[in-house]
Length: 104
Image 1 (cartoon, rainbow, N blue to C red):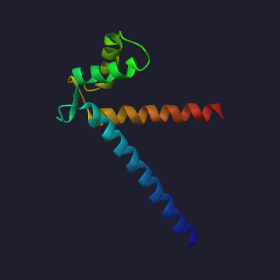
Image 2 (spheres, rainbow, N blue to C red; image 1 turned 135 degrees about the vertical axis):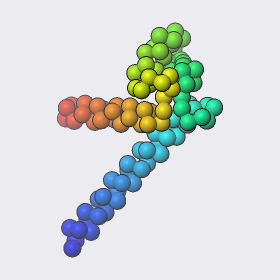
Image 3 (cartoon, rainbow, N blue to C red; image 1 turned 30 degrees about the horizontal axis):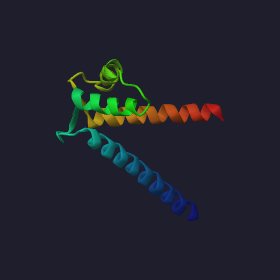
C-alpha cells in the first residue's frame, strides 16, 4: 500500500513538473507573439533574436535570425506555431539533459 501511495505521489509530482514546463513554454511563446495571433512571424522572431543578441553585444543579427527561423519553422508555413516552439524547447531540454548526464 505504501509503495502505491509513493508511486502516485511521484506521478503527481512529475505531472506537475511537466505542466509547469508547458506553462513556461507557452508564456515564452506569447511574449514574442506580439500581435497575439497564435503564431510567431518572421518579423516577430527577428525582434526576439535581435533582443537576445543585443544582450551579448551583437548588432548584426539578420543572418542568425534567418537561420534560427528556418530551423524552428519545421512545417515551412512561414510561421512558428506554439507546437513547433514547444517541440524545439523539448528537444533542447533533452539535449541539455543528455549533455549534463555525460559530464557526470
